[in-house]
Image (tube, rainbow, N blue to C red; front, side, top):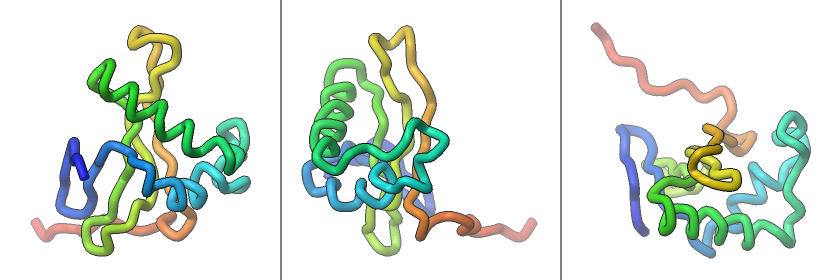
Length: 109
């Protein structure tokens, strides 16, 4: 696994072919994607992940898998969606419904 960023609770990593099943839980979910153009057809998810791997190689930025540190599960995606070139990018994030509403660890001041 190639991690591009880490925090106390999550990692961001470059998508690989093992993330297709997890991606069904966020990009393949109609409810979760209803305001983002709809769910991605399941037969296209492998190509989406390949696109993001290639964006990282070509541009050094991409959309990455969000991995929950404690469980090791891919729970979503976040990063920069390259449209036609790096001059036209969009910050995106999508999470599986099982991750919705979870609160980050709070620290005492």
